[in-house]
Image 1: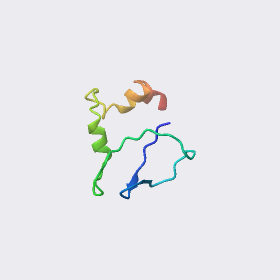
Image 2 (image 1 turned 90 degrees about the vertical axis):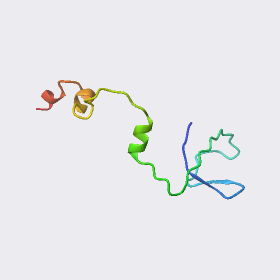
Image 3 (image 1 turned 180 degrees about the vertical axis):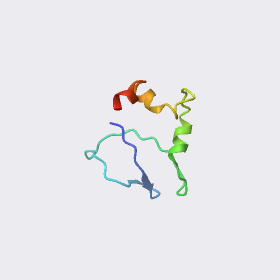
Length: 76
């Protein structure tokens, strides 16, 4: 199971912001990524960091790419 969570470090121990669904004494592997409290990540930040490559007309033909070219004819 992979879980992403936020936690606060008090100088000795990490305190998760939400309870964890783990049994006491469970062994886990942790990766720590620090961020400043004022850091705001938007969907746009995340989307641009993914470096997605696709056709230039994605935004205008989204339904056709998601549901197929004939999707507009079937809805009528």
